[in-house]
Image (cartoon, rainbow, N blue to C red; front, side, top):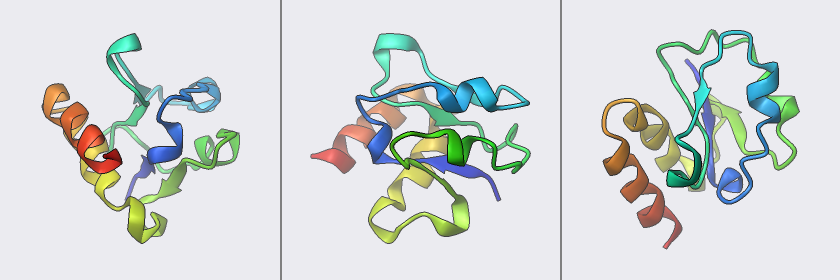
Length: 94
């Protein structure tokens, strides 16, 4: 299980989660991305990011609300195909 960043991060990208992550597994490509992404292969499930998020956008994978489940795929996918993940973000928020 990993942590997942969901739609409240879109347009916010506060980065408090990045500051507290002990393994630096939260990324984006600056202005190209509307949100941050957690690498499930690097995430150690410590949970430090969840309370640091000011917009409650981060959840343990098993706790992602049903309406936000698509962001599980988005976070995984960004590390394989960034353009496809960005397109999925737009699709989920349309």
